Length: 321
Image (cartoon, rainbow, N blue to C red; front, side, top):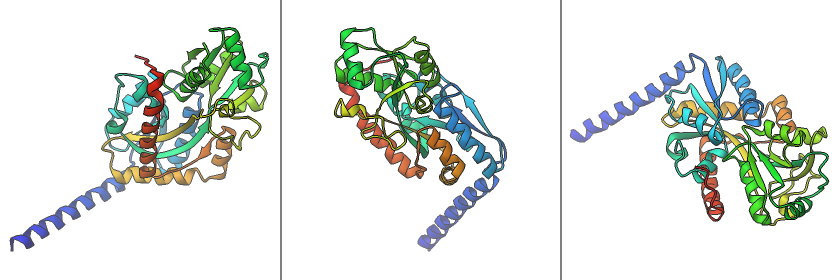
């Protein structure tokens, strides 16, 4: 009799939980949703958030507001989301910087493994190495030769401390064995503007492909292990420095504790949005390859990135505290 009573109690509890999750999803969303971008307006993180946000607002029937909260290599905005109420109304447009923060800072402002839930990886994007059109260098070998001939005179502009372009500059410097200055900006756009203006020698940015295509910058190489079909004429840095491989990525996170039904719903909506022809065309213009993974797939990818970069960054001993 006790066993039967226990089974009935467990069944009622399961039904209650199921009913609660269904009612929560049925009531959601009933107010605007916020996507926090931890970088300034104009860069790929911001563009992707607005692109996805616009389509989500249509499919979900509620406004999706993009809020830019830049600073500390994306840690400021990421911390805002990590501390937000996990009710399905606050999300983060994250990136590889969220992984790199764990290794560039001794005391990160949040713990990606504990404070954020993976929702979906949106895209994978190469970083592009480009120079001012007046710079004579035509290849990675030329840039290395310039850096060796004029130590500390060659500067590499990046989108900010702790980002994949920053990592790419530092990796190029250490693998080439040259004295080169890595300059951190508050986003890829201001970094590219300074290179176009002659204030910096070169830039590594995942926003650079449109600038290369319209000749505002001279493209030199991509940071991925293999060439990208979006710019097949650009060689990889790895063709000069074997083993060089940095792929930037962007994805959506939620505060830990957000109802799983809501996370799954947002993930499914994103997967559908990435298949819309106009969205595909816009992503191609950015040099981005759509992914649209499930929460589990994205979580597995983030965990693999954590393992990979912990191993790669330890010998570099980069400390931004």
